[in-house]
Image 1 (cartoon, one colour):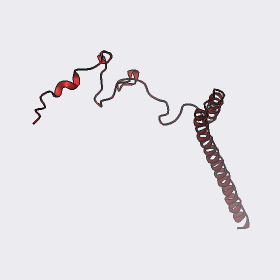
Image 2 (cartoon, rainbow, N blue to C red):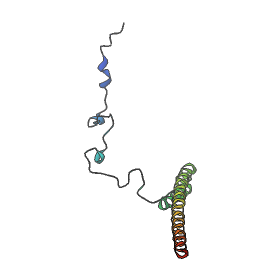
Image 3 (cartoon, rainbow, N blue to C red):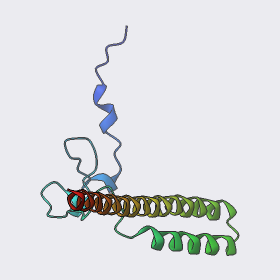
Image 4 (cartoon, helix red, strand yellow):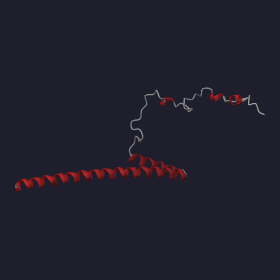
Length: 124
């Protein structure tokens, strides 16, 4: 039978570079300025701080540069990012156009209702 008395062997052979390595309560390495006590806050969490048009241009430039360096896979990756932000841009424009159309339709309906009310009062 095994006695398992030497369970502490695991900790013997740590490299010297890990002496200052500390973990937080989750078992993850702490990340400098982004600790819980830090005053760092994102302006728009969940969103990029640049607009979609700039990101499309950025990723197209990166794709062109990667292709000129001979990296077709990285270039395709950047083009996929660019396509993603192009879709977001198109979605934003469609939403904007839809809201403008709804606003215009609402104003037209209000104007028509006022005209009907005025016509009804004139006939009375």
